[in-house]
Length: 242
Image (cartoon, rainbow, N blue to C red; front, side, top):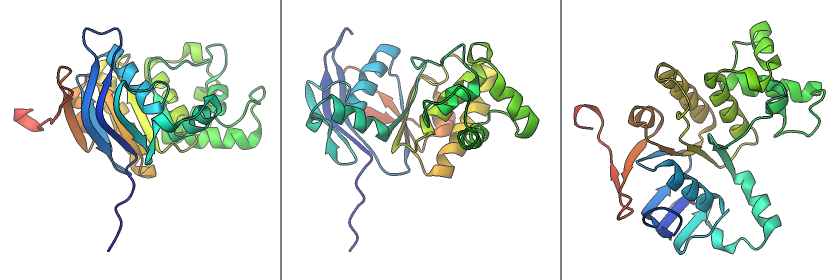
């Protein structure tokens, strides 16, 4: 008889007061190892609150958040919380790049503080990470991309840079918070394909918070519609009746 694997994420009976019209509520959500789940209908403010709950940056007023079987309420102090952050990779429009540094230097930061210059071994790791996330085609083209200043890259490149930094240290859970908010519509499908490729190569568990149903259904195994009044989650049908 096999023992079920510990879920990557469990949320049960969540309620959190914030500056919205009502508390953030979420009845129940479980994400298994390797599972990609998208939640639709969470606006930017509520998404920030939910990401903070998942990562342990804040604690729910009611309910339980468990990551890899550990209750976030058991995080004892700041050092414990900082250590726990290695479990997460966050893709968010709130994340920042060093605009005056090159893209290579920005992607090196999860690995080392030595980014001027980037050491050869770190540069090799950065190049592999960039290739996995669709940043350049390899060789001279990729090198030129990585030499660009972060303040000069396109929205499409910026989205992939955030993805690359999020997966750099092999997180247990990749959290995408409105990842397509700054992308032009024609670029979303290609970006979604890169997200799927990254997730499948790593068997990566993912929580996607988005208003973009097409993106959600392209990247996730399950797409769920959130009801902010009750906190209920309803499966989103695919095709004509979605």
